Image (cartoon, rainbow, N blue to C red; front, side, top):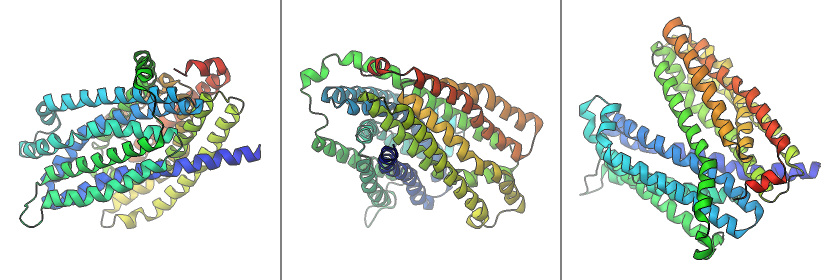
Length: 453
């Protein structure tokens, strides 16, 4: 048993670390654009921020759909049936591209109403339009790339997507710099150059992934066999993964609501939240990566109908997630000791606000990690609606009304306001745990077969 546990942990670690680095590099691409656009002035930065907010939400939905397809593809890989892998990949690609085309059309047709809704500063409209008119093409490129990445992850080949990002980032930086600022007689395109640089880099990433897929020989089913019964496959595929996309939208809109309410706090308190959030988000990627890799391994086991060790694998995944979360808690504690050094020159009130919420954000990774791994287990078992229901109830019916009441009516300190976000995560634990245990107890070969569409 010890040997099997060691194999399981080693396999998941090999998958997890590239996934975590990928997530950090995705954030890095936005940071590169921000740094390159910064010399153009506050107006350009604000315009990019508004336009990228629109695209980020739409790309988030596509990414969530691809993450759902990842579990479907992992089961297909576990079955070792080329027909299952090929049809699952085609179904995921069709679904994601349909959403990409829908979003592309919405941005194209309703660009100006969206811009006017998000900004009342008419001086920014031209720059927002220039950036959005180009960056929208990333929706189409990402529609292909994300599903390709999902297949590589499902095959436990997570290093290939990592290599694609390592190629993309320097290309994005160099090409964007040239297109933004120009060189020699070329005067540059300004903010539109940043968008075009991202499109070129992401196009290169898509081509790299497709070439790698060709040489993996993962999708080699004849066309006639591939399209046979594909409509039913798409229907079942979509039914499983759509709640994941809906869940992402629910959480993203909830996060936006939190941010709007945080902005109603005193400036120093809000500044403290802004300072600490990117660091906590980055650290959380390591916990998420382990949970995702666990879901891939569990899905592969379901696909191969190897259910004897399912209970022990899930238990081990939870234990390791708790261990990784504790390490992130330690890292968060160290961060709390040096955060004032990272952001010097602020008022004492801001540093006091940071110190007051430190116990909460140090504890948060442990709670959040426990919730995350249970959510991934439920998704691996095909229970995506259960995760959506829990997240919707805890965030929109309990936490956000309580958060709004605390900020707008009670006018409490930053400690109690921030504590509500921790409380939201803690609320999910009993529901996630009980649902995961229940479905895991009921899971058998018959239910595994039902997931193999």
